[in-house]
Image (cartoon, rainbow, N blue to C red; front, side, top):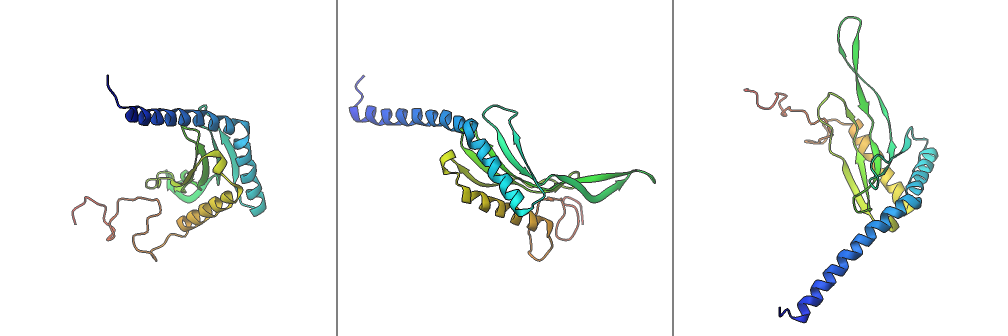
Amino acid sequence: MDTPDTEIFNLQRKVDQYKEVLQNTGKYREEWKMGLREKIKSILQHLVTATKLDAEVVTREEIENLGAVVLTLGTSKSGMFQKVNEDVRRDLIKHNGSLVYQQLFNGKIIVLINYPFIENYGQPRPPKTIAIYRPEELKEPYFVRHMEDLIQEITNWEDYDDDEPNKRIGFQLNFNPDGLESGQPE
C-alpha cells in the first residue's frame, strides 16, 4: 500500500483528536461526580434562598453518567377542573416549570428551561436550550443569568395574552385564529 505520508499524518491527527474527546468524556463525568453536581446544587439553592423563590433544588441520578440537578417550581392545582358529577371534580394539574442542568452522554452539561404546562390541556412546549458547557466553562455568574432566563420565560408564559400576534406559549392547541379547530369545515 502506497499511502502518502501527508495522508497518514492527517489521519493520525484525526485519530488523536478522537482519543482526546474520549478522554474528555471520562474526565467530565468524573468532575460531575467529584464536585460539580454539588457545586451546581449549592449555587442554585443559594439563589433560591436569596430571592425567596418558591422552588426546590433536586438531584436526579436514575441513569449513571446522565445525572441532573433541577431547580423545580413544583406542581399545583391549575384552578381549572372537570366536573365528574355534582359532588366530584377532577383538578387539572399545572407543572410550574424548571431549570435543568443535565449531563449529556459526553459528560458536558446542557442547561434547559422546561416551560410550565397544564396536564390534559394542549401539548407541553419543548424545552428551551440555554447552552451546553464543559464543566470548566460553567461559571457562577452564568447561574444568575440562567435563572433570569427561567423567570422571564415563565413570566411570559403566565402573562400570555394577545398583545403579541402569533405568540405561542406552550398550549399548542389545534385552533386557528378564527377559533375553529383545524381540519374542520367552515
